[in-house]
Length: 324
Image (tube, rainbow, N blue to C red; front, side, top):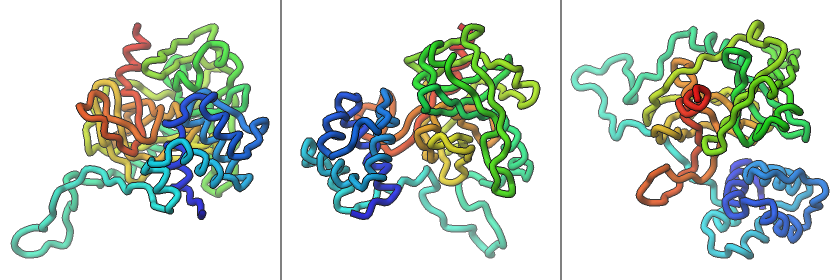
């Protein structure tokens, strides 16, 4: 079949939910004819399947993987939809139910939705300044994630990126890993992490905080953390290192679809490697720490309806954890 990027992402999410453990993924990989010695298996399911499917794509065996999964789940609608070439569901953010236009004489211009999308021109400049504090975290095993710098030379990222002091000690933070306005590779700077000086983590809320050597805040600045109250319909931006690559930002279709006192779900594009990215609101304040995505349920929902979304940890959870 013709494998589009959307089909691969949908398959990756489905397989991560159905085969969450490495031991679950191994027989699927073997039966699909993949050389397991050339795949970097990861404990995090979505990253694990990203690596498996990237190898399957390069070796022309994505069809084999799908066929093997259908042996275990022959009636699964998502897998069958991929096989038939059906696109993933198109998700629209909350918007006005109807729009009839103004009464009376037609006007030359109007705000078309329930909220204005107009922002001051300095919005772009402020975003570039915030991007200076977003870093790529590279681990000794070659995997990577995203993090961001706060005061006292502390980097915030996910627990599944830096689960303990030992992993942090062998990792580095790379600032300015991005392209210039001319499309060239910018000169980046590398800093060592110092978990022996400061390291805190939370498995439940999937965050870690670690000291960075070399006083990076003196040059790159620091993001300020403050309690946040995101609401459904708010617009958000994520500055990130998707796929472990150069810094990018998602600026379209970015809307909050669910928010409570612990989690925020949004329709903003990310990839493996984006874990640990700061989620900003329209005022460029950090409201969440991005950590996962795919077919998600809303926490505390009465029914287990799943939605194709990304999710972050409300930044209040990180702030409270740092205080304690």
